[in-house]
Image 1 (cartoon, rainbow, N blue to C red):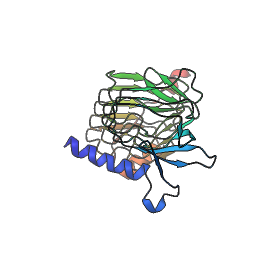
Image 2: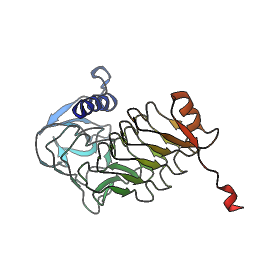
Image 3: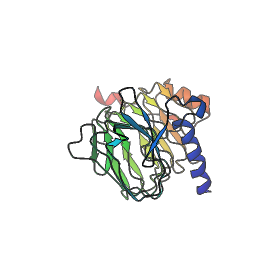
Length: 265
């Protein structure tokens, strides 16, 4: 059953992150096992890598071109990969770059990297203040996202089955596509008032998720956000909020958040 879910998830992710052949505009080139395209500025973006290696040091050049970008889902399904080093030349990392890399425990960048940072083993993009990747192999059961993070990137916590709680600071404004997919031990989560959007499938297949609080600041919720959340018992909302309307339209159980405004009077 779990294997079937992983296969289904992989197919969904490939559909979202990789365009159909007829839609692919960039010419794909190959060097040292990397499939890449040439960006408008003449630099290279890694689009795909599938070699069965355990440790990988991404080169700063491919065919003489500076490697400046890692595309969406570039290393998807590299199950043997345990460690990867990203050079200083890379200034942009796409969404969900290491999806289904079930053995990957370490991504390294230089401490003075101009665009990326590793904080407690978690990869962040300085460019858009985005949490890019949390290791599936990390054994911690609780995690507090650093204050100042603006976005939880697509697939950032996908398959992190050890996590039981995640604290989201009031700096976060968006929850990305598949952000918490298959976090099977996550039982409850509270979104702060700063969040304005939740992308599709953000909490899908979180089988033990039973409660989530969505503030009235949220004005956009994507498709099938709670798909496969078979134990979801309550979505805590404020009256007449966008979240309440979403729950009503999708048949989700909701309750009203307790009004504590009187405490401030």
